[in-house]
Image 1 (tube, rainbow, N blue to C red):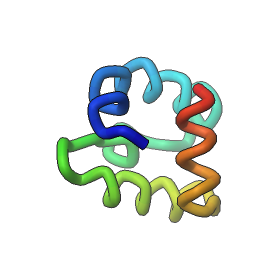
Image 2 (image 1 turned 90 degrees about the vertical axis):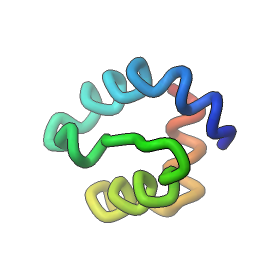
Image 3 (image 1 turned 30 degrees about the vertical axis):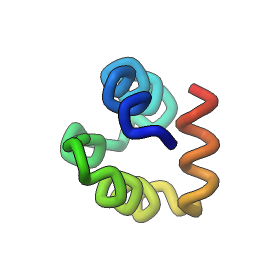
Image 4 (image 1 turned 60 degrees about the vertical axis):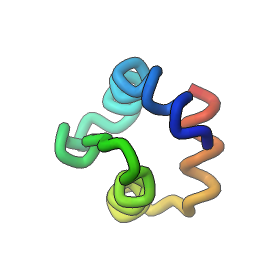
Length: 61
């Protein structure tokens, strides 16, 4: 996943993720530049998906 791609579209992507998983909080979806791995780790814990599954899913949004 390209960091700039994620950064530029994050608010849009975050909204789509919240539509699919309403139980995720803003803290779960907090994106900080350079901390992409932490974001993916939080999502992995909450959603029970692998890193590759999450990346593919986020790219498809």
